[in-house]
Amino acid sequence: MQARSSVSTVPTDAKEAMAPARSRWSWRGMVEDDAIFKWLLLVPALIFMVALVIYPTVFAVVTSFQKYILPRPATFAGLDNWRWVVNDAAFWSAFLITVKFVVIAVGVELVLGTLIALFLNREFRGQTVIRGLCILPLVAAPFATSLAWRHLYNSDYGVINYVLQAIGLPRVEFLADSSIALYSVIAIDVWQWTPLVIFVVFAALRGLPKEPFEAAKIDGASAWFTFRRLTLPMIKPVLLIVAMLRMVEAFRVYDILYGTTRGGPGTSTETINWLIFREGFQYFDLGRATAMSVLVLLIVLVLTNLLFQQLIKAIRAN
Amino acid sequence: MARNLLFWLGIVLLVGACLFPILWMLNLSLKPNELAQAVPPAFFFEPTFEHYPTAWRSANLGPLLLNSVIVAVGSTILVLLVSVPAAYSFARYETSRGHLLFMILSTRMMPAAAIVVPYYLIFRQFGLLNTHMGVILAHAFFNFSFCTFVLYGFFKEIDPNIEYSAMIDGYSRPQIFRKIIFPLLKPPIAVVTSFSLMFSWNEFLFAFVLTRTDDSRTVTAGIEQFWTMTGIQWGPMSAAALIAIAPMLVFSIYLQKYIVRGLTFGAVKR
Image (tube, rainbow over all chains, first blue to last red):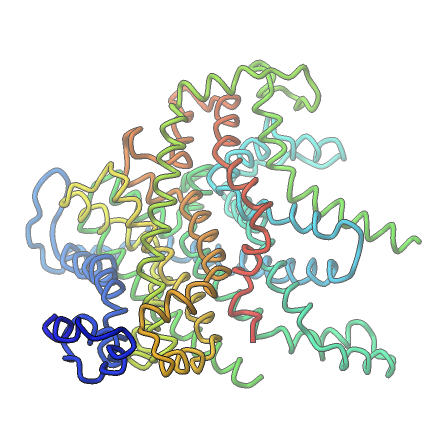
């Protein structure tokens, strides 16, 4: 502030010319000094990270070593929760169900989305409107739409079973049969998220260079050959990124489970998210719930790190 | 000609599949109670509009919608205040040589379940349960990495020489921001804002866990109350669900280009 008052009587342009002479630690001086300014810009982000990421993580780690069942106060419990979680069949079964959910859902979305994007990749009348309608599953709250799906899936009055019967197929217990329920939930996820893949791949297709495709056409290459050897390699980085994005998002599926199966029948659709929620907010065993949380966090970090490296390698190779 | 027909058949199938569940929600919301579980399902019937006022009153939708607006706008403003300067710092100065940026981006990988329990406990301690602020913070956390990522990509594309020459011309740093950077910021801010608003409006788990009262719960989490011990009230619930998703459906028409740009950001550019 001192530096500022000392130049306050000088005309404006002269003031700017004198900038280097200003004290480095005055407010103005810090803003004009790159080395300080770049960190000044990060102050809100750093506070944010500490308050909303680092502190909760540390808190979770600490709580995972406590016996903490609401409403009783927490007491130190050593490795009890950890021993329990690692030996808990329900945890590993939920983990496998989650992996199954993520792999199948994301796999189907990628294939289906790419096919539809290829299908839409031409000029036709009303294309903007059609694409605008396809985006709707993506913008509607998944919890709300999953309730409509619950009605559609019903084995007595659901529309899907009505149609199946009308064309002579047997009735299916979409949500009540434990060997089918997971796939029914996956179908909802596919309905909701395939548009994302469509839009991303579509944009990638529009951005491709024209020449190689014209050359392939002149050489008489088949559509399949063109796709395998030209289109697919060129959109591969985009596909990898969208796969990554989707996997992260699919891992935290919760809303549509709450709207449809609630983990059942039995534990056939109980994902990690669901299990932690049940442990923490139905049994109020927060020690175990946080031990699970931290374990999941570790697993996810390792997995995404591996995937990230693959991704970067694949993009570099292109 | 046959090919053309096949193409349009495909389009009809595609659009039908995308819209059917939403249209079915509309169908349920207009159906008299006695037809809600009719076998076979009723496609055509005398529509009734009674479920909308019922849902509005019994679920207190007015205040819930207001909560959703406050939370969505609040978390968006907060996340912009945090991520705009951070993204600029990363893009222009490579602050911390990318380590911090990577750390911020990787918060996206944290599974919701792993965060929700500690958030619940911490917010309980600080009296943030059942407040707008609690949900605002949670939603801002989720949007933070995405917003920083998009804005970072954008700032990277501004030629720093524009700023340097402005500096030589005697512009101070605040002037450079006001006169050069901010006017350029509009499109990426629109992208980030539409995503943040949409995410916050549609988010369920955190809004559900962190709030219990009508003064704080968002409308998406509020639909849950039609799920009573005696079963689901399909008519009022569908009406409420439609009211809850309607703002985003309408919003998507206006912001389609920003949403698409946001979806394809980083993936396609460059």
